[in-house]
Image (tube, rainbow, N blue to C red):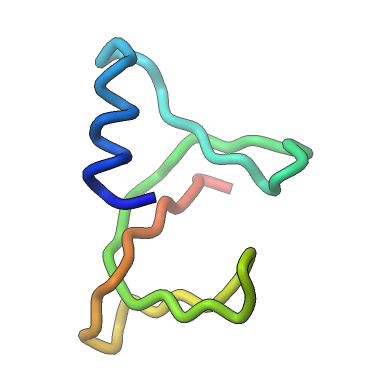
Length: 67
């Protein structure tokens, strides 16, 4: 999903809804979103990879949960 797609998807919801993040794809836990950071995402596979916000290369936005 791109930032434009995320904006469009979020536009369908009221502004006062809280944003939460799932612990995993199965929904085994949820946490409020604490912050968004841009950085570099390097996929290891089609479903996971590594994120680095310190190398100066930015190709992704990461949603960081509180816990």
